[in-house]
Amino acid sequence: MNFVTEIALPVLGLMTLAIGLPYLWALALPEGIPGLVANGLLSLAVIAGAVSAYVLIWYGGPGDVPLPALAAFLGLWLGKTALAWAPMLILGVAAQPRRWKEVVW
Image (tube, rainbow, N blue to C red; front, side, top):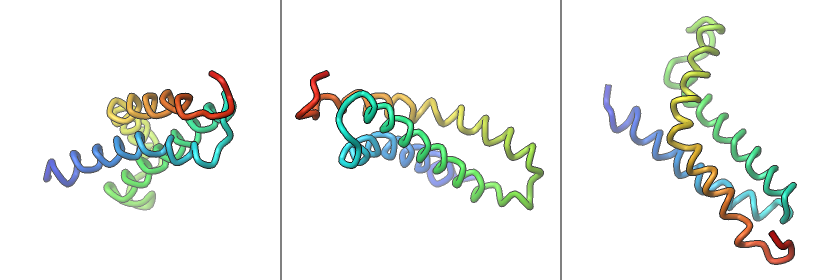
């Protein structure tokens, strides 16, 4: 097991994704509280999908592992990796009102 390629790089990638996604979604979503909530939920969904894809690629497809075991492991993996990317996502979403031009926070 290589720590850098199997753990460090994916976690750094998730952190970068968590910081960058809110800024990309802000270009397409309207300013205001509904857009901010949608930004957070869409960013969360994309990151959860990225984590799920990584786990499926790393541990094999659903044919290799029983589905209940895969679902339980995926939940644990999301929880563990959330310690790395959730604070970055919160900071990225919380910084969006500074860039609003029409809506007052």
